[in-house]
Amino acid sequence: MEIINIKKLNYSYGKKEVLKELSLDIDINKITGIIGPNGCGKSTLASLIMGIYKEFEGELLVQGKPMPIDNDSLMRHLALVDYNAYLFTGTVRHNLLMAKPDATDEEMLLALEKVLLKDFVLSQGGLDMMLLERGQNLSGGQMQRLSLARALLKNADVYILDEATSSIDNESEEIILEVLKRLKKEKTIIFISHRLKSTMIADKIYLLDSGSLKEEGDF
Image (cartoon, rainbow, N blue to C red; front, top):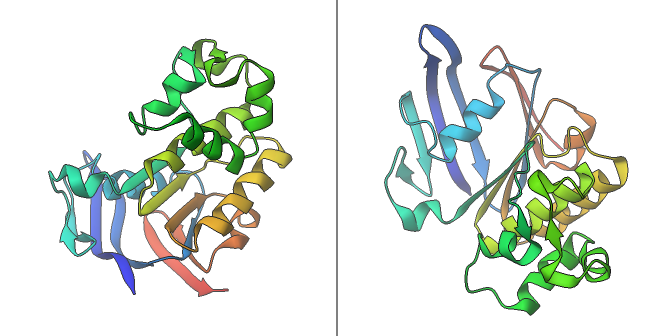
């Protein structure tokens, strides 16, 4: 069963074609890998699904509803974790509450535990641990894991990870991949990467090149 349907999707930046007649489906409660070289349109596709970009040709359905859509209730069911895990200066609590303002301490600690950050955060002052500007007192891997914990609190139906493991340490990448494998039991995951190895956890992989679908395969 599909949760996202894309048919003959075209998108351009000015006169530059980025996506060309792209057709693919995203299955519910599966990990779908989207791979390809830099500049092939992967991140553009993520932005279209998230409703960040709105002008396109073709068909893009999310939960059966055509995009772009100004529907807050629908967009709350989508979460994006990209390569630039932006963290705000302030406490860990402050950053996590951005995803779920009414989250309890127990919920936040559970989200941190899922990404194996709970013990570290507790050792640094707990949820009131201060983060420096852009998370400078965290490693790149810790920043991405904290960003994922924040997304998990949102309890979305669809999680899009756009190059989220492209520039982090191997340990953090393995932790994130294990989280995704468990998460797919109840959520839909789109895992975007330029590295085939990282997408080996996917149930299905689409290969993009120059904005077009070149190959697809199941695992």
